Amino acid sequence: ASGEHVPVLVIGTGYGGSVAALRLAQAGVDVHMIEMGMAWDTPGSDGKIFCSTLNPDQRSYWLRTKTKQPLNYFLGFPIDRDIPRYTGILDAEEFSGITVYQGRGVGGGSLVNGGMAVTPKRENFSFVLPSVNPDEMYDTYYPRANAGLGVGLIDSAWFESASAYQYSRVGRKHAGRSGFPWGFVPNVYDWNYMKQEQAGTATKSALAGEILYGNNYGKKSLQKTYIAQAKATGRVTISPLHRVTSVAPASGGGYTVSIDQLNTNGDVTTVKTVLADRVFFAAGSVGTSKLLVKLKATGVLPLLNDEIGKGWGDNGNVMCGRANWLWDPTGSLQSTIPCSGIDNWTAGGAFAEVAPLPVGIETFASFYLSITKNPNRAQFSWNAATGKVDLNWQTAWKQPGIDMAKTIFDKINAKEGTIYRTDLFGVYKIWGDHLTYHPLGGAVLNKATDNYGRLAGYPGLYVIDGSLIPGNTSVNPFVTITALAERNIEKIIATDL
Ligand code: FDA
Image (cartoon, rainbow, N blue to C red; front, side, top):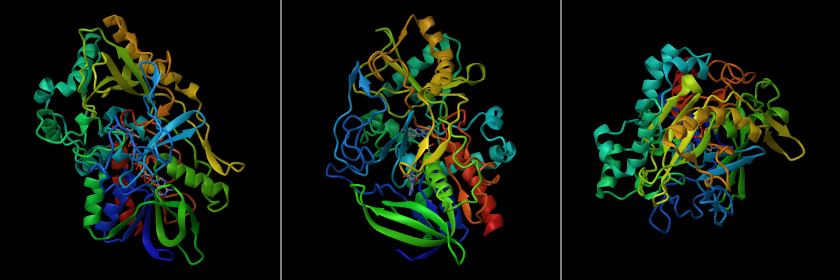
């Protein structure tokens, strides 16, 4: 309620925010979480909470009147369609040179992501987080994060027979014939549930095209793990459809947090203020960066240092498809949950997930999302004329990432006598180079904050999400975001409370 005084306010309910809320609550602290998206706990008129990628409705996108599908063409034809404007689950946030996809709702990115739960190889860790001691991460915090998230591996014997993973087996065959290491990738999807979907004994989710707009069954999103545990302490409350707009030092100590309550059209219905002793920024790389850049530039938090807004990267994301021969079908039934990847990080700077193309028909296509060692970094800045925060990323900055992904796929194409698909991202366009699923950075650890996420200049203000990570994790990011949050909150609880 407006005017309330809370010990801790957490902005956002993704990985960083959920870890902070759970551990603070377990330490006896009352926590209030503010989330701009919906609660996603109530079925729609079709009896389901989430809609399928094959049939997007108003629930699919955050305040858009037309879908903006990451794979926006099929057979050279645009496939986006009109939808009613609504506070839907996936935000395709457009900056000048890149579209950044993010989850909106209680659970953040865990609601919409592929669930791939990958711990970076230890030899790559100093590249990922140079100021963090790898021993404590690999001995304590990565195991804690994997346990908290419910990470598991596919049953390798079952994998061989599952028709829904034919595409993955084709990916393995092609990787192997070109001499690339291929391996299983852990996931937070319930693999036993997946088996039942394949056997036809449970309602299909991953096998029914559910993913980008939420999974109705099977996926252990944060709602089922950290957030469920946090709520069970009785110390955590969550306000969905509330967006934080400002955090300002209060005269008597603590911080005044300004919050807009939204309706499902995205209109502001009420403006509230809350006094908080401590505030955790966990609005995601883009959300946290936008808030901090604005608050510094407009003189609300002038003591924030000059690292605010810097060090942003796209985790080197690039997508591509390959056209297979007719004797290499990838399957008309494809699980939306990827289970394998091709590792050429050390030699070529690329780790490629063998991704599904779950369109319900045989496409003879292999599809990949590559994470590359693209060195380009962008910066957020305040645009006083528009009253918005800009990001100076340029589409051409994807080129190093494309070149790294080509170290894998040019070789596979040469070996197999195959070509790239040119019909998935436009008319005669090979590379999906217009987007990222993995925004990272903007309030980098040990630069914009101290080595535990304490913001420079303001005791009681913390960053605890993907904005702490300087642009790249060498693999999919959420396990690292979770593990770093576990590390930082443990220190903060021990020394600051
Ligand atoms: P996260 O983005 O999760 O949470 C931030 C929350 O804050 C959101 O719920 C947002 O609505 C809220 N918020 C923002 N601004 C606010 C404000 N001003 N007031 C109130 N609330 C606010 N990663 C991975 O490891 N494996 C994978 O398979 C995938 N796959 C994948 C697919 C797709 C389609 C996407 C979009 C992303 C992925 N990811 C992924 C990436 C992963 O989901 C992402 O890295 C994490 O969710 C980031 O966690 P954070 O805690 O940083 O923020």
